[in-house]
Amino acid sequence: MSGIAVGNHIRRLRFEHGEMTQEELAQRVGITRQTVIALEGGRYAPSLELAFRIAVAFGVDITAVIFWQETAKAKKR
Amino acid sequence: MIAISGLLASSLLGALLALPFIAALPVGAGWLGATVLLAASAFAVHRWMRLSKGETGAPGVEEKLAWTSLVITGVVSAYFVAYLLLNPHGNRVAMFGNIAILQIGWGIFCAWLRRADRGGSDERDRAIDARAYRYAYFGVIGYVGCLLWMTFTAWTVVGVRADTPADLALTNYALTNYALIGALLFGELINSFSRLQLYRNQRP
Image 1: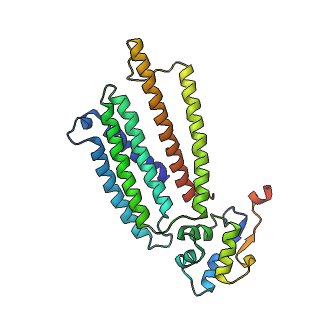
Image 2: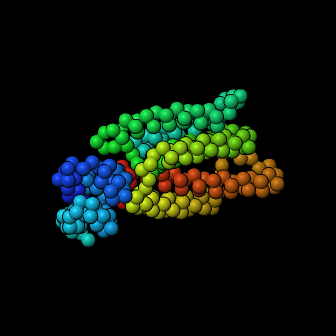
Image 3: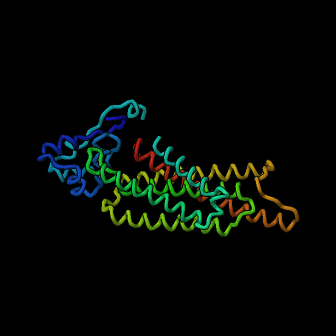
């Protein structure tokens, strides 16, 4: 994850759920495939609402989707 | 970097369209530019279709629209400035006619792109959009500041002649219009360039 304080396990969750495709996840939560790619690449932190929608799509708790990670930028804040 | 290359290429095309010998051709510069842009669009669509099958995927529809916006604004801006500099006594109606042809062609292409790409937009697109508009706002403020500075430091504009007070009034009127059009183009350039940079490199 590059410089973003909120990390995610979306890629792992996708593979744990029958190798769900990025397109399929995108359709389930109502976002574009590019946003899924950006989330997995650590270039975008989801809003709370989106994180909840992803958690519901995978049938897990929100803490299994996103987590806080200490980065130099986050420490400055 | 690729956004800068796109901007430079489109600006070059715009400047070429303003060359006096092209303005003298029977087929208007607008149609010529639209044809070149149509060929470039076909190439881009083909490339996006290939990318959509890959790991990184094709750009989303909003990023594609940002690309088209950057290119058309680059062409129109360069054409506008180059035409005023290279053809100081040229036909202004023809110039705006050519710009209209380019803009209408772009509008049709954007409408087709939106229809063909069913991806839509989401919260990331909206966040990027908001940030790009903020940058564009600051850019336009800077542009206006530069114009005011140029006005108060008695800059002269190449190709503008004002032999009588009536000419001077007309010149001032024309310059004001050009400055306003320039503000629109400059704001749109910053907006589309920022959007592309945010899509490619940064987080919103």
